[in-house]
Image 1 (cartoon, one colour):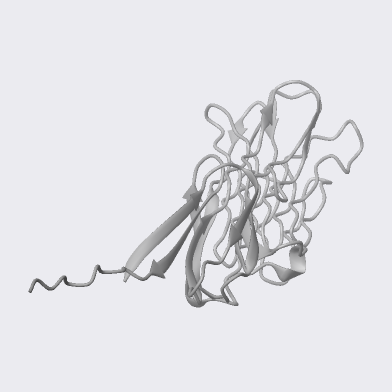
Image 2: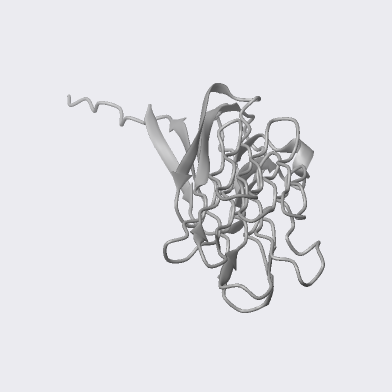
Length: 244
């Protein structure tokens, strides 16, 4: 048998059709980093891998998380693709939004049908002192740094917000724009559950419960998310020729 690898490196939606005679996929996924700049490092994306049982012809939707953004002018900042929490800056030096999660789901299905999730990291800030965001999980996201950070998500709930900023939700990081215009709130990282918003963003949680030989870890990816899918393919040998 040979091994075929298909990689998806660009943030956004992608399509994968399971080839003929393939019944399992070895999936390896990384979530996206939150938004940060200079000495304030955003939380890096989490990592998840395992073996996914499939049937030939199954259509899967691959969502690669987008990196969070960092802004130094007042206003709202969008989150990274696929659940990164938005951020809001008011009267300080800079703030980052959350990184998006990377996941695999059946084509056309929503958040509850995700098969594997690698979490995104939380945004960083510079409110006079540069403070790091929390990394995407593991089964639990990492809390942001600082006095009033957003908390990391778990397998059963979003990370708590702090400093008047919102909690994370299922699949979505804490939304720093869901606050009054005079607030400063970083975005939480996306994930199975999203990290909380706060002075810094908490990391989202990864998800591997449906996979075999599954492993997950926090703090593994800078920039946008990434995913590898590997599967076995038969090697066809030419028949031996016979000479009379």
